Image: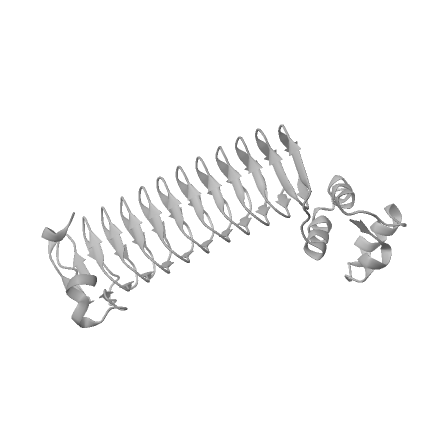
Length: 290
C-alpha cells in the first residue's frame, strides 16, 4: 500500500512528523517502507501513530532472529529464534517466536502472540487475540490480552492484568495491581493480586490472596487459603483446603447468583473452619473437601 502526501495529511499528523514525511517521501511511499524508515530514524512514536491510522496488512516478515532497537511491522512477524530489542516490538497482526522474547519497552500484537520460550517486557504487553507462552511471563507494566491467555510457568505483572477470555497459568500468578478475567482463571500455584474479579470461576492449586475485593461470577476454589482484604463474593460455591477469610468488617458471600433453595447443591462453602463473617451460602464443613 502506497501512502501519498494528501492521504497522510488527511490523518492530521503532527507538524514535525509531516515535515519529516515531506523531506523523505515528497512523492509518497510504501506503507511498510515508511514504518521501517521511521524506526531507523528513531521516530518510534510516529511509526506507531502511522500504524494506528492505517491499520494492519496481510504481509508476513520471517526472520531467523530479531536483534534490534525496535520493530514496528504492519503484518505478521514470524521469528524462528529469539526476539531481543531495547525498545518496543509492535505488529499489526500476529507475533510468533520459536524462542524467547525480551523487549525493553512495549510488546504489542494486533492479533495473537505465541512464544515457545519465555516473555519479559519492560513495558506493557498487549494482544488483540490470544497470548500463548510455553514458559513464563514477566512484565513491568500492564498486560491486556484480547483473547485467552496460557502460560506454562509463572506469570508476574507489575501493573494490571486484563484477560478478555480464559487464563490458564502453570505456576504462580502474581499481579501487583488489579486482575480482571472475563471468563475463568486457573493457576497451578498461588494467585496474588490487589483485587481480583473473574466473570466465571477461579481455581488455584495453591492459595488465593487479594489486598482488596475478591469476586467470581461462578465459584472459587483453592488448595490452600482464600484471603481478601475486602469482601469475598462468589456467584456459586466456595472451597478452600485452608481458611476462608475476608477483610475486617467485610463479609463472605456465596450463592449470590443461586436461589436460596439451591444453596445446598450449588452454593456450598467448605474450609478448614467456619469462615468468620459468612453471610450467604451453605456451610458444609471441612468434610466436604475433595
